[in-house]
Length: 217
Image (cartoon, rainbow, N blue to C red):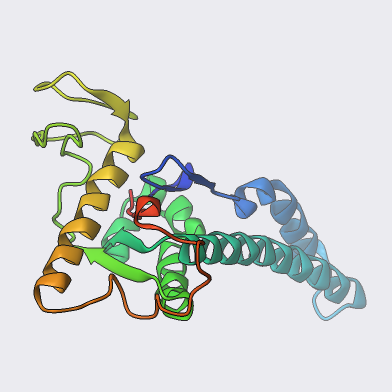
């Protein structure tokens, strides 16, 4: 699964998890309410009322974000045998000032945190890719790795085999390959089941064909 800003997550099977962008949708209202607070006389009743209206709006933004994250992570943990996500360096990512606000709003850290405990609940396996794994630069068709892929390139075009594919979908398919390779290593160590916790899951609800991964920007 590839995580992003415009689309929160793109799964290797083509599933797309939309980013609610709750803060962006209410930015004007929050700005207006903040001005109302600043214009009221300090310690006045009207100022307290304005502060409560501002707090309710902030709470609404947070609730929308939390609801979207919980629904997405529950769906993934319940329906996928294995999920692969990139190991993100969020502190470095937010240093990109033009994107810092959007990255913070996306809550990638909380998204991965929820996946960690929900995968344990539902018997799924979460794999974290190395931060230097070239999921975005690698062609999921032939394996050729580009030297550089700019953020403005939303379509991946392979110079080697000619494949043209959505950038995020290409990255998610590369991450899916890590789920298969890590499974092979587990089996080589003598593990008799694909993952712990699968026994006892609803029969017929999962199969190896439903294998899906997860990544980021």
